[in-house]
Image (cartoon, rainbow, N blue to C red):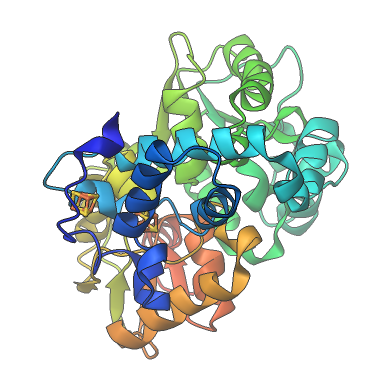
Length: 368
Ligand code: SF4
Ligand code: SF4
């Protein structure tokens, strides 16, 4: 078993945002590995089992532990497998996740809102500014080269509207033949995947796969790294390449007009984008093409992943607060490329821009 390879060296300790926020060993990867090893030896210790199951969901699944483990422990695989086992063996301890599961099963989005509302709020906001946007919403029978998969956060949250505006404006300016999945989009399945509910996630994926393939697109693009993990790694799309929007624009734009920079920028690399999808070059390449000067932030976590916002919002807040203080980004604008990281940054009143907002501004000849 993978956990047997852990030699308790402690290299993962200081890098773990949970250990950083709590200072307590049991929250660290080494602490959890130790508990798991002990549990493998002492069966049926109820108290230990309960403690371990709680700690499993106090983790952002950022992957820093796995990236830095010299013994090659597949920590993310262990966390995923153990989460699935925890929910299966002790469902009563995870009743707080039931409303989310029900919403995903009934209306196919994390907010429990009507499925048709996926293409309502942003269309109302943007249709005057972007003529013809309504015609871009997918309906059965329509085809295009590119399908935009917004994901639940970007479909429903008002805080994402500036990113959507920039995304659509940029696609229009580049004369991309695109559709937005809209009401036909189901959640990508990532929240269920993070709980280890593979069957539930698969049901959602099957619908999305069918819609994307029926639209005969060459690419499906998304701004959300979590959605991209699902689309690229788990949807089994045939003849369709799933791309992060930064990859798509990096390929599309050999050059970009210079960005009229008047502020200090830092770049926050989303964990899932950097560590899980290994998309590191393209966001930076796009930023560099605009001549933007920016500071690299430490490759750490915003605290928003792994369902931590649901399972322990206080710890999630603490992680982003510590990160912001340590990096001294109060007076800078944090560039990122993930709607979930954006939410975390905005929750602390930090200024943030998605890479596509910068691209849109540069193409339009000035920052807004
Ligand atoms: S770095 Fe790897 S081997 Fe070392 S304590 Fe962490 S999980 Fe165990
Ligand atoms: S995935 Fe991230 S938060 Fe979870 S144990 Fe590993 S380093 Fe800590």
